[in-house]
Length: 79
Length: 142
Image (tube, rainbow over all chains, first blue to last red; front, top):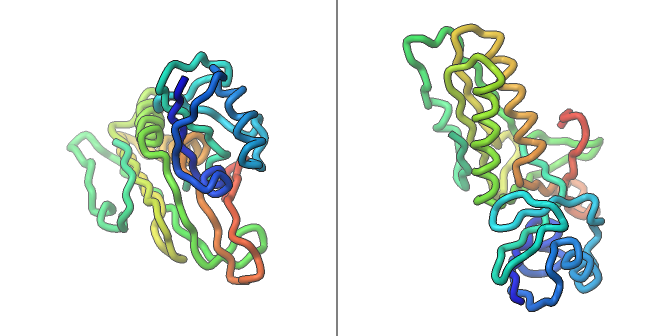
């Protein structure tokens, strides 16, 4: 299935892109991040991240659907 | 109400939430300072995941209204490339009595730093140091 992924901050820099459509057989954020971490050599470990699906925080075992929007959230630092 | 702005937010300081029941107004200004963790900082770059940031920000303001006896609350966060002294975040809380407004204002800035998807990258005066994304998961001392 196709998943829309947006990248921010350190992940955007390491992926060298802001977004992409990923064709994948993985169905949850956990498996997709492990795949992307190897692909882009992400420095952040999965336990340092949060994940959002369709602009809501969700768990890493959330069951994804075709064209869901997925964002891995590095540690935040507003203020 | 929670807002994100790419432009200067100084003018928001004129924003008034005053009604006749208000006996206290507490505001907070978060500004870009010239150092962090022993390094001299030249500027900061803020990045936001806006759709989620606004949603989380609104939730924080709603929680503040439920937890504390306040009348109203507003927060705006600036993003983009900010220079030393620039206003990065501004909060105003109104209440009948001062204590609840002080507590709510501190709750809001702590929660914003904790959960709103905004990131900042530090550019250092020492150009031999690579600019770095700040990860402040500590006790909100920054």
